[in-house]
Length: 82
Image: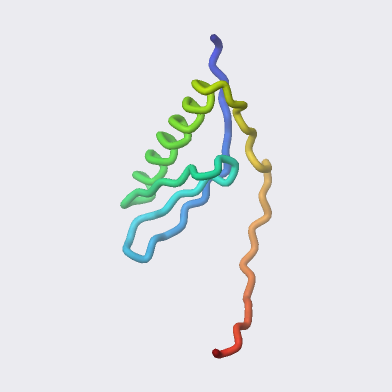
């Protein structure tokens, strides 16, 4: 079987306790973490690979990325004091 290169949007969020939490929006539940950005990238690649292999093993379709150019915005929300 020929291999295929897939691309996914990955979000690296700094964690309060240090390191990074990683989310892959196109793959629900595909979350990992790393103590450094480099480790988080490695962990993300491993998590995505495992996720996709599991889907293939169970005959599930391999999802495409949610979008090739996501729009990310920071929104300010005013919350009245309780």
